[in-house]
Image (cartoon, rainbow, N blue to C red):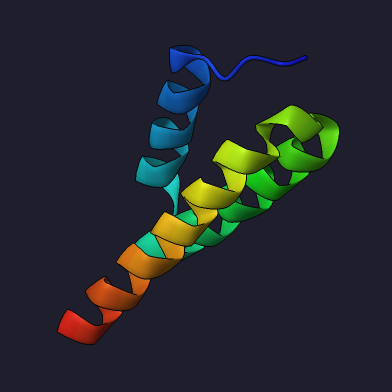
Length: 65
């Protein structure tokens, strides 16, 4: 089983900074989380909740813009 670490999270944040847009970063990270879910099925519960929250937050952000 893989473990989600602070280093993995820090790497994601660094990639966010280097993307052309926040949306590109969200889409790329979403794909990474989906791939991680496939590699480590016990992560699916948390991973799917993360994806739901990101979708909800993105919808709120886009609506406010």
